[in-house]
Amino acid sequence: LAQEDCQTQGWLLDGFPRTGAQADALLGAGVVASHFILLDVPDGILVERCVGRRSDPETGKIYHLKFNPPPEDPEVQGRLVHRSDDTEEAMGKRITMYKSNVDAIKDYYKEITMEFDGVGDKMQLAQSIADFVAK
Image (cartoon, rainbow, N blue to C red):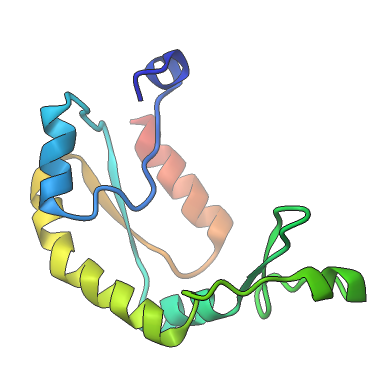
């Protein structure tokens, strides 16, 4: 975050901090956010998004079996990888951990937080987030 591009263009931390201790550490290091974004997505949808995810290690592309299917090409389909932690059980544990920590994190950033509905039109969501960040 001390690199010139972060200083001039800004930065984004995806999924971090996850705990109050991590938020404390960021503040202690002088890392101060200007905006804090929370996406509100029902648990069942989070699980569905996770378990259908596949990646192509050759191209780096990420697909979803339902929402963004891979090409019908047998070669591509044969390369697809399903991460071992992209299971319903693992996602359930991540959701539980998130719920047990999110309130502590919200307290650190309450003055700069905006919550968004993470379900629906992704272009509209992206625009709403861009509008918030531009403020």
